[in-house]
Length: 438
Ligand code: HSE
Image (cartoon, rainbow, N blue to C red; front, side, top):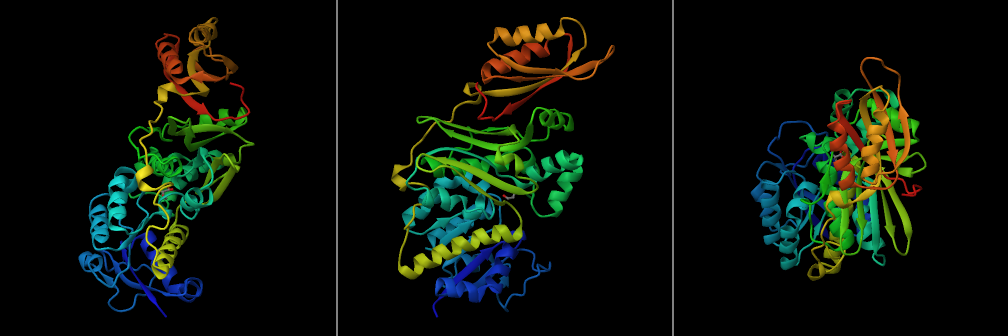
């Protein structure tokens, strides 16, 4: 029986999960691949903590260089995270002619072009199924199953931590810190949870998806990013009254010469399937010109689901090695030399529907002042609710708009916030509702 030797860098949640899966399902994988997946080395700086995995003697080591330079290792699996040593070791492994697998979306979204270029030049594979959507086969679906499609849009929930927090607040009235602490305890959150909560993790994933779907050079910097830390139970409740749920969405739309790419809390109607994706679950709707819409749904974080995605990459590479194929499937959607620079639409140029919440004094003429500013900027109001009746303090006034331009909306909100009858900063939440007219 042939053997494929695997070296894993990093034995945290996912590294331990991959090790366990390879050891416990060795016979199953052998029967599916026709070769033995041998866990040759697992590296971590901490050799003491019990990961619930029993390694054969000599497998578990803190000497990363001995693994990356081991001539017997065919595949290096980078699960260290971060951008320092992880990047150096991937480049070293590539230089040594090894195929590489990584789940490191932060690294790929910032340095993917350099890493893919290096792998391309060396003729090795660099796979990354676990970097987006945990166990959901997002990368393969876009790159392989939908290869005959022009992708028109991708809209999804790509961060389990944020979805867990929003679900807990929506369904159970939990407070934000408690919900975040639970997500961390369950192993969903990044080492630095602001990456989750402020939308960066979702943006890292969206940058990878854009590149994959549209053949565009990776561009994280131009993605508009807004996290969920400003979302209040009050807005979640108003959203419900209007028939919407609030989700942190990754939104990508292909306009031909440009791409809309944004991450922000979004109101979506109850009939949108994404509104029923709860807890730590992720989902992605992909629209292709031959298939219309398809949707992937599953665990986007956690040990076993992420390990499952890594093992699918290991299997692909093992099959390539066994059949003598190299770079059989391009890293992204097209051949490396066809990758283009496609500009991302600046956020102030998008048009969508909006939810506003103003905190205003309950006096005659207040509404007309606000409506006057909106009207002057061509922002058409679809509905207005005023909540409560106060003779002293401000009351919340909530509005939904028809399709409006973001630049006009920002100007209007600035002018409205300068009115002396308006307290606090107005709240803006974008709406994604296909049934809306505009
Ligand atoms: N922190 C990420 C999440 C892990 O919460 O979805 C998976 O990328």
